[in-house]
Length: 568
Image (cartoon, rainbow, N blue to C red; front, top):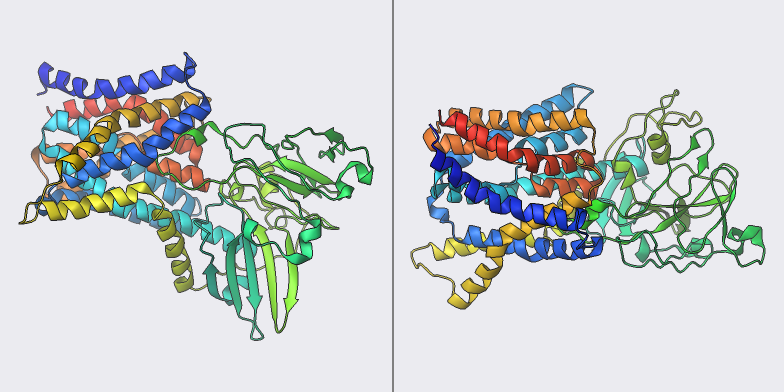
């Protein structure tokens, strides 16, 4: 039975964390102390310094030679059980798929162990639970987040191949080369694909950043944009070098005249975004809003982000139209006839053909285009609008390159992305140092280094919660995905997740306080890193955002309820 003093001890451990979150929320929402740009600077400090150093501090102090193997096996078994069941659902049922496999696996198995789990479990079950939580943090950072990133990149690679090589064309790819400056396939930066076909029909694919390779054949008709590196303002400054045919029908008035989807002349004085456009048979596309979302001000998983580009498109009458892309826009080429999704320029070389396409499929990651009455998918913009295109001949069954090529491609970009994540280095260096310091030589950190790390790590928990409060205040509303999705997500996070953990713990033979600690840590709020990945790859970010925000509010009473029930 839980006594009043034990309950008070738990509240003493958690109240300071929620106080930091409340102060941050009020400083933005009510008192207007911080602007969005200032919040971005605070969050950058948290993501680059506070959280990585906090991770290193905990991991380096954990003895890896005395790890609780039964606890680790129980946690691993619960995640494997969830992953297998979701995989079977994705394979056997039409309602499943890789998208929901990734999202539901994140929701059910990846809680906020570092920030919330360590202080909460330590107050509930004693000092030894800190080592248990640190062991789970190491596994999360090194294994589970890497697996999650692999799945996101797999999904992005499949979308890229399916879009660029529909039907059986992808089966002829024998080599995939990724340029050194391509960090990820998440669509944050516009990419360019080049395909070279030899005389035997074998295709060699090269993926490049679009800003580093512009074909000579289309330079004269290209749109040259120089964006200001900012995601924090609706007003972007561009240097526009546009052919005369884009200005007032070739006239010399000097005013920028563009046309929206209704063929109405629009005058622009700097911000060229926000206009709709039309496609033959597909109606008007959804209106694009500003490139800055309030969620861009929060990141615990820093990834290089490009500024906003404006993109050029053409409507059904061949009229150029301007609109703004959310984060990393596509640069479309003006040609004589409109193209549905991807614009391409071709040049011929001796014995080979090189096809170049500029791609940025970030928006396409959010929803697949619905099929038309003829069974053919619309382009990505039409899919979002729910419109239909003119009937097109079916392209047959979709093929993919060989598994070895796809795995090599995904491992390449995953490795590059992990190499730019400070949490990767803090986890690995902390683990290596713990192996050295707890060895038979018993080497300790020099005091000057230990105290330097401690002064930042002591503020790490508070700053992480403060950053969460800023993130919550910048959101337009708490529940962004709808009540139904939010309810299902909460049930998975706070009921099914602990249920799988309890089953796995019983299977491996955990008992007593270790069993209770395993169940309570599975009921912690949603982890931050899965949400950051979901936002970067455009996969259900509204659901993960709701679970992070609303989950932080309801997690304290939920975990205390588990604590009381398990103590009966």
